[in-house]
Image (spheres, rainbow, N blue to C red):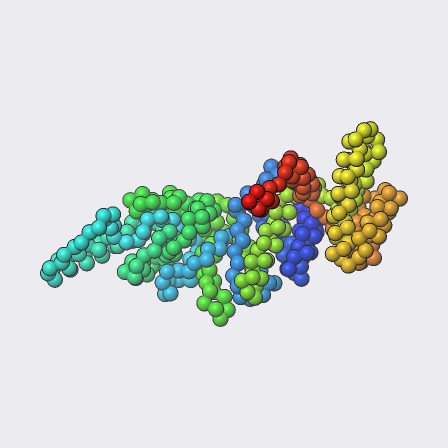
Length: 381
């Protein structure tokens, strides 16, 4: 499929954002992410399968698309292997520790033998848990809760890499993507409930001790993660917001592939069409319709003003050109490239987005007009 128009539209979205220096790369990442999870035949995109993770450190251009899931955790023991190939993972929501009574309890140990018996029992609990995991064929444990040093050492001893304190949302995403089942009790573990992935690896970043787990080649889905890098947290957060916008725009294009031209071209064309309807309308209604057409002119005027141009002069120029040449894709030349042709400048917007903007703005105005009076603060004090 030719994705050039998708990339152009995503680049238009990113032009006004802080990451516009790298808009070509970011637009490509957004398009690849959406197309990886899109069902083009049904014009549907499962947005839950696209995750955006951010890690301060590195540069913006280090941002990458990972065809898998990124979990902001590391293996529980530093000596565990950093890479597990052909992973069969058990996804647990039960803690890796001996059961504790819910009520307050107190245990008096009066002799050495009693203490040793307690210690042996605790050890047996841990050993049984690890054995159950090994028996079902798992070679990786992903646990929602933590486990103490005893369990950690035992897992290392049995060569079972483990990840602890994984959040509920991430746990669900891992389960969906790997085709595993979330297991609430050790007794319910069996081979059919294991999740499968091609490779699970731990990645560390440069000199910082930041580590993340990357789960790739998931069995059941094409979940993808955009890993955003940047100099500090503020840049990373801003880049995440910008990429989310770009991903939404590409998603809209997959749902409905019609585009309109940006740079105020669509608004001017709509204003001219609405004004023509006003000329053919009798009675008071024509004034309301004409006012709507005037309101649409505010967008190209704001664009011209923000670009350091004369708003009225630009608007008049674009309007006269659209009428004279009958070209609805002529807009405000914000970047001053010497042409008003938005087709040539590759400035696109999605039709869904544009319709939504106009409908929402109209609905807000209708809501405000329904208010009879506003009680100002202190008016009836």
